[in-house]
Structure formats: structure tokens, C-alpha cells
Image 1 (cartoon, one colour):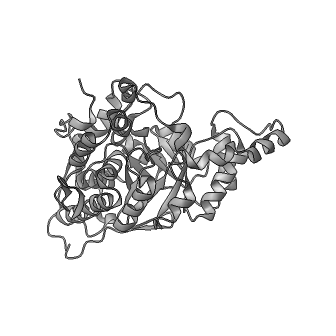
Image 2 (cartoon, helix red, strand yellow):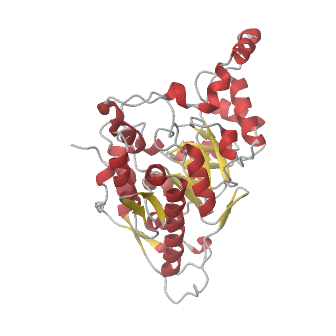
Length: 380
């Protein structure tokens, strides 16, 4: 049992992702909760991420020896007990004092992967000390290449096993948080970037003067440059179109993450599961394809894996778990998810993750509404 407080307890196997997010809604200020689970505009993309899984049904295969079921995988040299990552989410010290370190510890206890946002509340070095060996580093593009190079070097020194560059960036969309009047404490909360505002760094910038290699906007030439300086696998996060997937392969990146930033950037875009098969076809098996957006339960994970995804990421449910009781609840939720996935593979007749194939899922013509959407849709 993971005791959260006197009137609420996390019961292993007894709480769903939506239970945790409903509890987080009760615990957190409305603006903080809106930041955790809100999307862009009228949140149609946010809803599509969830509802997209309703287009698929799982098809068990019988008379298969599943006396032993193995959920472990190795993705780009990172060994996991299950093909699950916690997706990068920034500035979450306002959710729980343990912040990103709590998620890292919870992920480590459950044997799943952890991706740290470069907008984290604590430094990447501090999080690395939180015992999450299967950790990757997410970064946004910044026009100063010296800062980019330093972030990557710091990550490699701290033992992060891959770099994840978010490419679905641009103008920040109006999100649910705006309606609450809450303003994110970004200036005080982004620990990784504080050193670059120091007098030492500012003097280095002045001494260097204008650098023609500094690029304000992110483009494929920046991806090529970043690939040339990293010594660990490089993945692009935010791919939702087949042409971009093919371009990523041509650019020599090591993997892609099909993602729409949790529905936070474009209102009206497709749910990630809707475009997964097209992107997999475009990639042609040359690099691993991961996915996040809308994943809440083991059956969602099984659907994505059956379609061909190498692993899945979960963002807001994990942050909600953190809000409910720190690392203990995060680990409990993720351990339950791994156990549920193991049971799902057994019922589906897949002794291991590689045993899941396209034959394990069927696509139906219409969405089946997700009755558990409540905490994730805007209040009307």
C-alpha cells in the first residue's frame, strides 16, 4: 500500500489512470491541473488522442504456449522490463515536491524508461542521481549552438542514453490553462537553463560576438548538426506525417516518436494512433518508431505494439500519479501497467512483445467513445 494521506490510498491494481487524474484534480490548483492535462484550443486533438484507440479491437490468438510471458525489450541499447517510457513534462515542481526526480525513481522501480524534459524543475544531473538507469534526455532547439552542445554534453556525462529532440515546436497555442488565469512559473522553474543566464555565460556570448551558425528556427540542417555532435542515439519527437518520417530516416536519426505534444500545439490535428501505421510504412522498419498521446491503459499499449510501435510513452497520467503521492504512487501505477500488459500478452497469445503482430488488432469504421474521457476534456 502507498499511503497518500489520511483519506486516500493508492491500492495496487485498484486504480486506473483516470482515477489518479480525478484525484489530482481534487488536489491541485485549477491552473496547475489545467497545465497537466489541458490541450490547445477546444482540445479536439487532445480528445482525438484518446478516442483514436477506440478505432481498434484486440484479437486474441488461442492455443499458444504462454506459460511464460516476457515483456522486456531493448530499444537503441536501452534495456526495459516493458516497452514503456514516461514522456517528458516540464516544470512539475508545482505538482509535487519530488518533481521530476520522483518520476525518475518511480520509473526505475517499475523497470520502464524515463525521458527528462529540458524544461525540468531540477537539473538533469540531480535527476540522474535519482536511480533511473533507463533515462533519455529531451531537448528543444535553441538558437545558441554552444548552449545546445553544452546541454547534450551534460546529458552524456550524466549517463543519459539517448537525446530526444522535440521538433513539433512553434507558436505556443492557447490552452486550457489560459482560462484559469494561472501563469506558469517558467522563469523560476527551469533548472537546466539557469547557468546560461549567468554572468559567465553572458560574457562568453559577448566575447564570441555574432555567430553565423546560430539559427533561430529549427530546420533539417540543425538536425544534421546535432546528429554530428551527439555520441548517443538521436530521436526526433513530434513526427505525425509520413513525408517527415521518410526525411528523418534520410537524415540518419536513430528513431522517431510519433507525437503531437499531447494535443497542446494544434487544435484539429490527428490523434497519434491514427497516423502510426502510415508512419511505420514510410519508415519501412529502418529505425524504431515510438508513440505517445492518449495512452492510458495496457490495452492501449498492446494496440500500439501490435501495429508496430517499438514502445509507448505516457505523460499526464504519470504526472497525475506524482500529484497523488510522489514516487511511490508513480511506481505503483507503472508497476500495475506492466503487470496488466503481461496479462494482456498472455490472453492475446503472445509470449513476448515481438509476438504481437498486426493480426492481433482489427480496425473498425467508427470511433467508439471512451467513457473515461471526463477528467481530460474541458469543463463546459
